[in-house]
Image 1 (cartoon, rainbow, N blue to C red):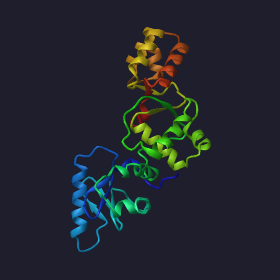
Image 2 (tube, rainbow, N blue to C red):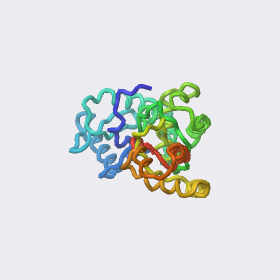
Image 3 (cartoon, rainbow, N blue to C red):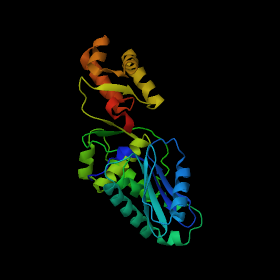
Image 4 (spheres, one colour):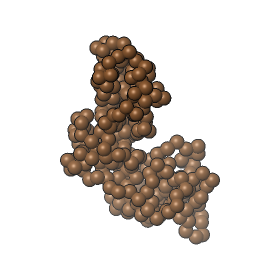
Length: 279
């Protein structure tokens, strides 16, 4: 899905019930200095008591874009953008889908917000955590709990994971899988954010490697199997040297080093500095 928005500017999205003023779904994208719950409460109060409709609240470091429905409002905290229209178009669609899909739950709301968790995925279809290069190859690793990986979201993530074989690029998966392009990007960005996958691309001499937190047992097995060269590569991959610089500094055959580099990348112990933020 082609996005007319810059998702790297997004900090936080929340859906707030108008009647009670509480946030019933929230999706943080970036660390904020202000408690997002305080922002939600502030926006709700402004909307309720304002005499004229308010659609944008501008703060020193960010803007709050607001769209109001019949039962809920949705707010987007975003770094200042030159054009709000593309963001609002997505927000209105998200708002419409939410109120349509949860019409009965909103009418008989009992305070349990867990039933709304799956809708986080629908938000990510419009605003994924990252815009990921389709040429990158996803690789599995062991990550953290994804709070909204329940129900149909879990099914979609499992379907995507079944296509990961260490060779297929994200673009190839898009062409093979039954999910839409937007769903694939939503799944991939969520799995990357919670460290269930990382990415590789065909490596070159000029690439810079960084250490990743792979499973200790995996790293220990590689060290036991290949010895000191593995430890030397891990130590040298500190984000400050190109691969060719590492090779020049190590007393090993270049083809052997390339073999170990690819093995460590595939195992999730090394990654590319340029895509660190996705891991």
